[in-house]
Image (cartoon, rainbow, N blue to C red; front, side):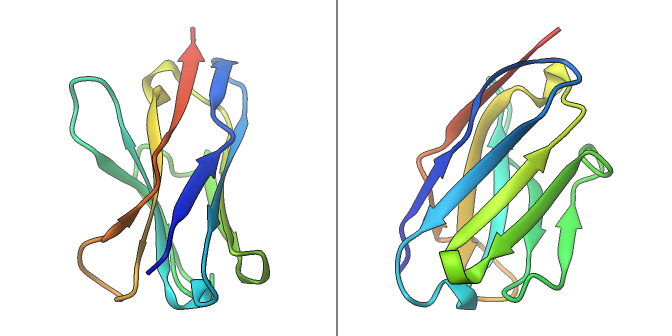
Length: 119
């Protein structure tokens, strides 16, 4: 089992940047595929980016491609989401999630961190 804690959210103007961090507990962090999701008010939770166990493979939703970068530091039990060129429509609660399988649902979730982008 793994516990996740996000940090780094806040208020930023459009065009600005934020870096989210997710700290994981446990000694097997490197065995988890990690994902960042977001949920805006009145909308469903959606996948933003995903990174493989080794960090060698990444996936980005079309709406963040070229603007967001996901990375991980297994030695520090940390996954990062660098968000650049932020838009007001990026406003949401951002969640870190983990799964032990290569595909399927994410059973482990953090509590979320609020990102607000003003126009």
